[in-house]
Length: 166
Image 1 (cartoon, rainbow, N blue to C red):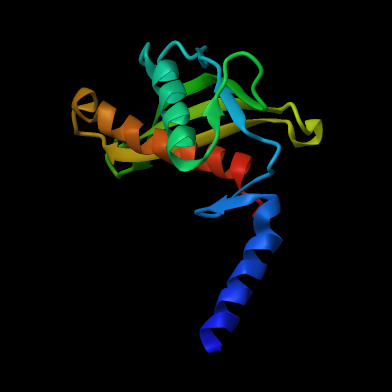
Image 2 (cartoon, one colour):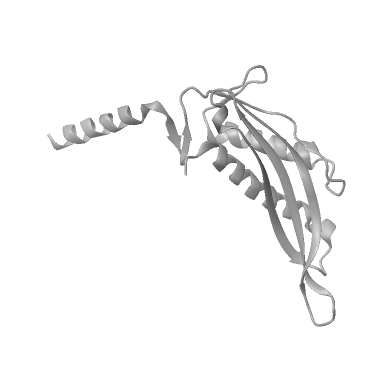
């Protein structure tokens, strides 16, 4: 009798939430089934020439792996476009010798989110993140790792803004 009650409660909860699916905090309306990530552009002259393509591919991968949405280049329900607008190294943490002990790599990516099913959800937003590193270190040897961390952080925020109702 007790297991029958638990099963009934589970089925009731399933019916209540059948209007949208939820996976890892993701909330996507049932009429959203497809996505498209257009190739991001690169306007920052200092950025590696493949940073825009790298971000594009990582966003596509994240959506494919973490949602039930399918890629549709022709008539997607939601579309992401954007631009890498900033790739800059700043000097931080000055010391007493008028030098700096830390440098900061900052990346900014402008993202346009277009929802064909609900235009009220559309937005354009800049996402920035940074990582600090020792100013005495060789930036070229650290660059890929720093970019990986920053891109992952920005991707997570873009994904959360698009697919969660927090």
